Image 1: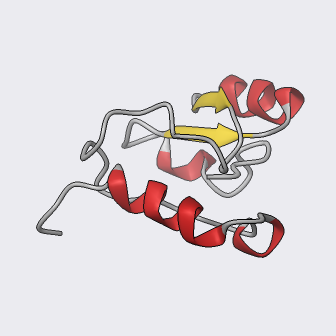
Image 2: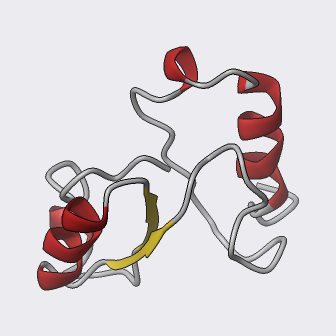
Length: 84
């Protein structure tokens, strides 16, 4: 969530499928060039993913910037697989 240009995720692409959410179209475009499946969306909207599909969710430098951080974290938790 809040992947920016993918600068903190690019190293994961080599061994994993990486999906991300980014507010800025340019940031998502640059992340996409690095092999990241970047979606343009806000973290205050319902996420664009199916619930329970991700092993790891990275939330970095966004919680302090959103009006409803609890909702953003609930959305992050919703897409994580259970039992991890």
